[in-house]
Image (cartoon, rainbow, N blue to C red; front, side, top):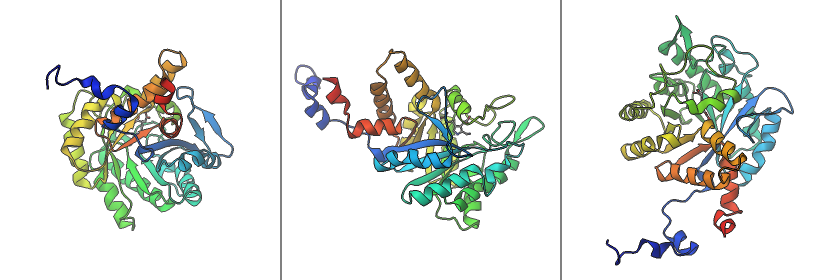
Length: 332
Ligand code: PBG
C-alpha cells in the first residue's frame, strides 16, 4: 500500500465514511458502574477527589440506579464502608453488613441488574490491608478463609457475581470451593487477576476510607514494571476457576490488556480506576482539556486494547453521550 495509490484520508473525509470503517464501538452493555455504599438513610457524601461520585446509603443508591438501569448499563460493582473496622474485617462477612444489605435491596428493586460485589478485606480492617496481618505481614493462607466467607455471605445476600480484589495467592480456588459448597455453584467469579500496586488508586482510598495504616500493598499487588508476571497471575486464576479475568488499572496498562486478550479466551474486564477518572475530571475542571472527549477517547482505547467489559466511574456519563449528545454532532 503505497502513496499515491493508497490514500488513507479517502475514508476519513466525512463522519459517515468514518463511521463505516470504525473498528471499535462502545456500547452501554460494555460498562460496569461502581458504587460506594454506607450505612444510614438519606446519605449522599461527595468524594472530593472524584467529582460526581458519592458514598450513598442504600435508599439513595436505589435512586441513583434508576438512570443507569434505564439506559441499559447491565451491571454495578459494590464497595462497602462498614460501621466499624477491626483487625479481622468482620463486617465484611456479617449477615447485616453494608454490602449484604445493599445487595438485598438492590436485587429487590432491580431484578435484572447484575450486582457484582468486591470481595476484599481492606475496607473492613482497621489496619487497611487486604488480609489478616500477623507479625507485620499479610498472612496469605489465613486470609483465604475470610475471603471465602465474604464471598459466600455476598452470594447469600443475592449477589449475582463476586469479584475478589485482594491479590492473595490461591484466592480464586478458595472462593470457588466455598461458593460451591454453600450451593452457589452458579455464581461466577470475576477475578482481579492482574492487579498492580498502583498510585492511581489514591482517590478510591478516600472514597472507601481504606488506606493502609502502615506500609503499602506491594507485597501482594503486582509490580508496575511486569507483564510476563501478569500472564502467570491470570493463568493461575483461570486454572482456579475464574469466569471473567480483569486487568487493573486500565490506561497505564493497555499493553497488559492486549497481552492478556491475546493469551486467554475468557471474557476480559479492565478497571479504569479512580485516579484515571480524577485526572480527566481535574484537567477538565481547569479548562485544560475537553473532559467528555478525553473520557470517550480513553474508554475507546481500553476497548481497542481488548477489554470486553469496562469498569468505570464514567460509565453513566459515557452512555449518556453514546445515546444522545453525540460527540461528532457537537464538534461541528
Ligand atoms: C480493594 C480495591 C481497591 C480498588 C478496587 N478494589 C483499592 C486498592 O487495592 O487499594 C481500587 C479502585 C479504584 O481506584 O478505583 N482492594
